[in-house]
Each structure stands twice: as C-alpha cells, then as structure tokens.
Amino acid sequence: MEPSIGKQLGLATFVWILYFLVVFLVCNFVYIKLRGQPPKNPDAPVILRGRPAPDRTVWQEKDKRLRRLFIAIGAVLMLLPLLLPLALKRFFS
Image 1 (cartoon, rainbow, N blue to C red):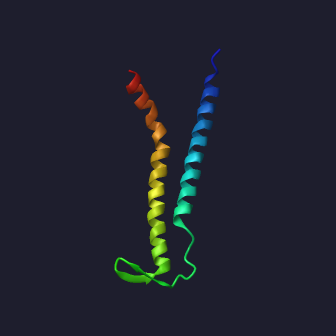
Image 2 (tube, one colour):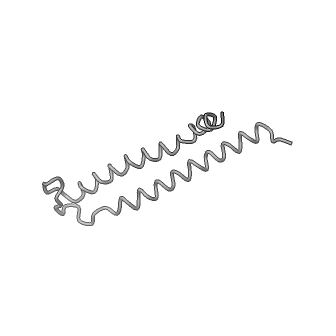
Image 3 (cartoon, helix red, strand yellow):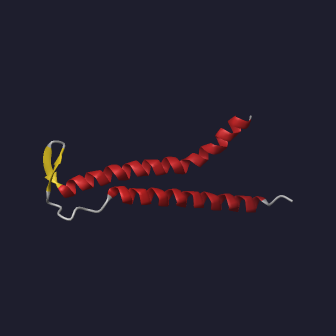
C-alpha cells in the first residue's frame, strides 16, 4: 500500500526544512569560528594594504568578506536540491 500524496508531501517538506536547518547551522558555526572575537583594543594600529589602520576596521572587513562568502555557500547548498530532480531525470533517462 502506497502512502498518500499528503504524507509524501509532508515528509518531503519536513526533509527539506531539516536540510535547510542543517546547512544554516553548519555554515553559521563555521562562520562564527572563522570570524573570531572582536579586537580587545579597537584602536590598535594594524597594517592593512600597506597602510596603518585601526584593528576594528581590519576585523570588520574580514567579517564582511566572510559573511558574503558564507551567504553564497549557503545559498548554493540550499538551492542544490532544486536541481537534483533534473539531474536524476537526465541520468536515468
């Protein structure tokens, strides 16, 4: 006996949400670990592109780059299952 369409749709939705949650949590965890803590002395001079800059500025630029990178990685991973049915259809036909 096959499960009803409602059960299949509910299970697919649950798996999709679970997949998104796992991708989000893993990306968020890695992002926070790579970002690090804000500098304790934000006005300490640091060399950035050959010029002295405040430590806070360097940390904020690193944070901005990492945020963009992980948003892109998360978006690609979250949209990847949408392409899976097309790939499987081409593979098995």
